[in-house]
Length: 168
Image 1 (cartoon, rainbow, N blue to C red):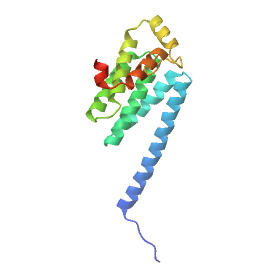
Image 2: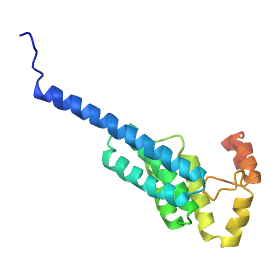
Image 3: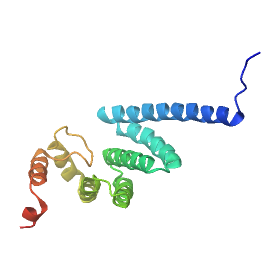
Image 4: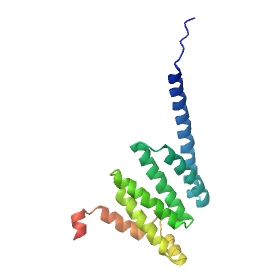
């Protein structure tokens, strides 16, 4: 009749590709949902959604690209943890992020290390100190990546100075 029979391994491959695309779409939707919740300052929902994202990415992460994705998603979750004042969880994740960054020689290792230090500083602040800190951030959001305008300006100035000049 002229019909070709597809070999089972080709069908299985095609099914796995479709499944991977479906998982990626679901993952992207969850990531966007967590981000939208955080933008609404609904950090509890952002945390709940992002925890599922990180759990899924952890299961899949094997290649360098997938490990970079894992690092980014753990970073986001750590940021959301600070929004609900789960500083120990945020610090634990950021330590893991920095370790992954360093192991893979990622360019954002230093900025992630700075965020880790910021989370550590937030963890030891009193609630009143944190409230004052957040009041000075550009968006007024309680996250480890949000810094007061004055601090942001100083860091931006330092970014423009090379390491030798900074040491002096």
